[in-house]
Length: 296
View 1: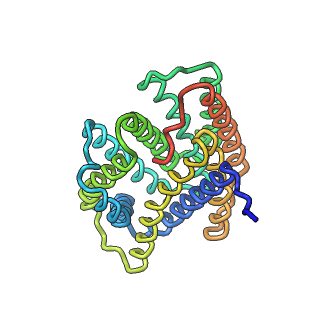
View 2: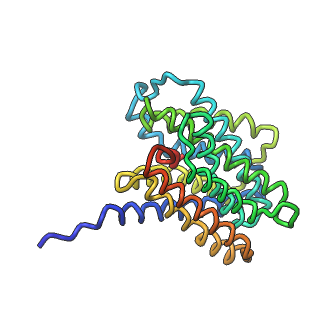
View 3: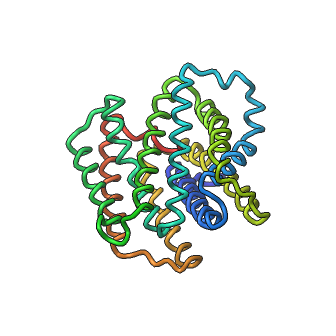
């Protein structure tokens, strides 16, 4: 008797749940580390251990997989990733985890605007309305003039903006280059850049911090692999809404580990952003758009 196969979309959804959980734990580890290490140093070690994790695949593929016609785009992407991670890890130290996670969901909104401005993609009425609605959700969460608004919120929005830019670079590169070429160039460029940036604030990590850094680097390497695997079972526009499972996961961990209770406005704003992204996903199915912007 043959075993019934699990529907592809279910497999993809389960893998996206794993990606969301990995990203949530990555954020929690960053919260534990920022008490002892500067955000730029965390970026360096996270990238270094991700590079070590990927080393066997890099070695197996050889030098040919680094062939590229766009070295400056790779360099720009690495600079953007350094800025995004540095801003994100600093925001982790001063914002509630649920607030930070909810603000980071604004990335597809910035990506939509960027794709229209720089890649020539169409800005249909539904897409424009959804983008505007999503930014209303961001404002609900950070509430300019309220207690939530501060340096952390500004850096969180900046991190989302940088990640959207990174996604646009990935989309541009993926037209001509393989995914492993894009990923490997990123870690090889980002590791020395992060090292140089962290030298002025360098503090040797304790053994316990080093253990967390190794785990964080491992999660940083596994996450993109799980995402790539998920895309084999469903397109990004279908799977993207499952990423919002990250918010209840991070909210639960924040409550249990750090006694953080998300405010009602966090959930309201996140729900508005979620609705906006769903509208963008529906519009995506009518044309080009977000399908290549994830898995950064």
